Length: 143
Image (tube, rainbow, N blue to C red; front, top):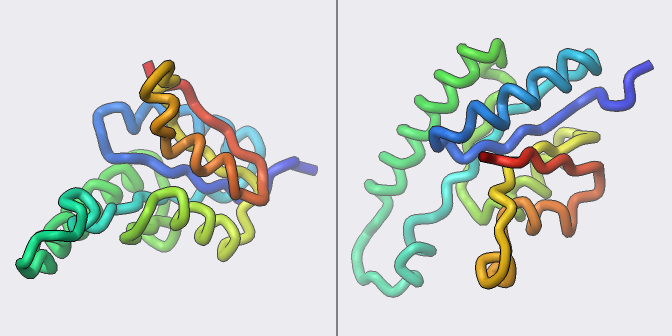
């Protein structure tokens, strides 16, 4: 019997995403688990403190569309069906917590840059996911 039946891998769509995906896919295959591929698009307003007096919905839609296309390419490359790909908008930690709960995930896999010093104090997505997730969390070191 496998330890993990359903895994969520959260990627940021940078050139480092394959480092996380390769390990996540290997673990998933070894466990015979289902893999849910997730990307969280942060709201455009967050980047500007929400103080811009303009409608950013068109830009948000473009970012969302680009994310779906890129996630689709990764899904195709790694054999993860469109029904197991999720692009959502919000704070990455909160959305990953929500999706893990909603999909009864037993392992969340995220990439981590291994920040030190001041960057560590500011926090990272991996750290945010770890605190508040009800299942196991695996941080893949990104080099």
